[in-house]
Amino acid sequence: MNREKGPLDRSTATEYASWFKALADPTRIQIVSLLARQGRPMSVGEIVEFVDVGQSTVSAHLKVLAEVRFVLADSRGTARFYRINDACVDCFPTAADIIMGKPAPIPPSCGPTG
Image 1 (cartoon, helix red, strand yellow):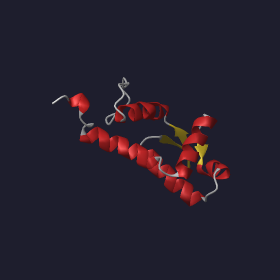
Image 2 (cartoon, rainbow, N blue to C red; image 1 turned 120 degrees about the horizontal axis):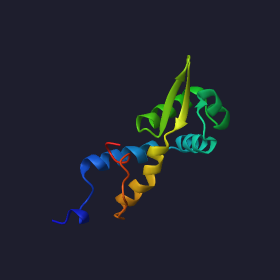
Image 3 (cartoon, helix red, strand yellow; image 1 turned 45 degrees about the vertical axis):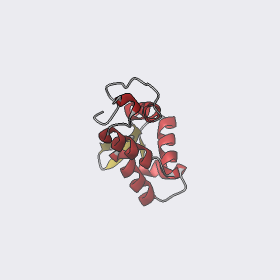
Image 4 (cartoon, helix red, strand yellow; image 1 turned 120 degrees about the vertical axis):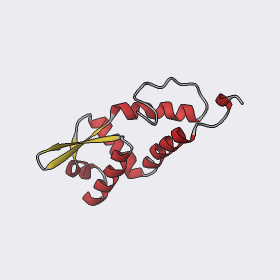
């Protein structure tokens, strides 16, 4: 059987599904977009100022985004600052291409183990 004509392996499909699931919420899309456009680490309080939800909701969304490594958290004293993980965000379009069967080179930092 030609593996290129078959589906993705289960491990890769599971990883990519978690990425799409993490982005399947408008607030999380807003948070990723904000962090990418700001280009700097932001506190939860700063993020709350830009999105129309409360601090606990933003924190919950950041947790989901951090689990799939779209955002990274840095501690500064007692505060946590969140920043976009450029490596994983760069991989997302590649993942979409692969799912749709388009050939796309995967940088070493992309994929289920990246």
